[in-house]
Image (cartoon, rainbow, N blue to C red):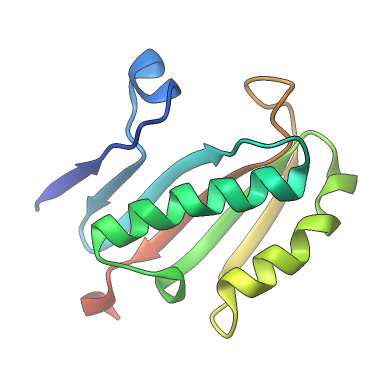
Length: 122
């Protein structure tokens, strides 16, 4: 099995020792991703942009995402992100989980992790 590691310019990747995504066995596993901005919706969109870049590099798109996990320190900030998420996944919504938890830095309002399948595996 071929394993491909996809790196982004994220500051935490070299500090912690991980990569943005790993492609293995027809699956794309995208690491938990935070975004920049002051609000949860701004950070949500920025994180999705970073995730999309990794999916694109792997040869996939939003329609190929089968699982998503949202992590927020305050569950009340999740609802304002819903329109962004609906627009992102459109007619191909993945299975989803939302967890209220602490994130690596209090400035982060949302972290998103996805699993996708390579299109030729569908």
